Image (cartoon, rainbow, N blue to C red):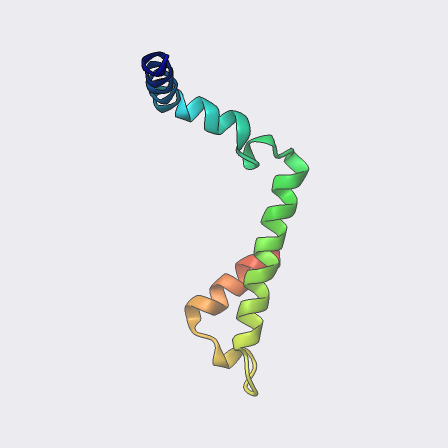
Length: 81
């Protein structure tokens, strides 16, 4: 009886090992895979807003002169979108 139990455990472990990717996808699906077009748009918009906020927080008393030329160009690009 114990040999049967050991054999069953070994078979289960081998099956789980070779099917782990399918099991992972079934129990933990990729959340970005099910995004709609609106979800992607909103996520991109939030990322742009975060970057704009980061650039604006760099500006001090001198305003836009405190930013590097690279940061100014990026701020211009983001503000046009």
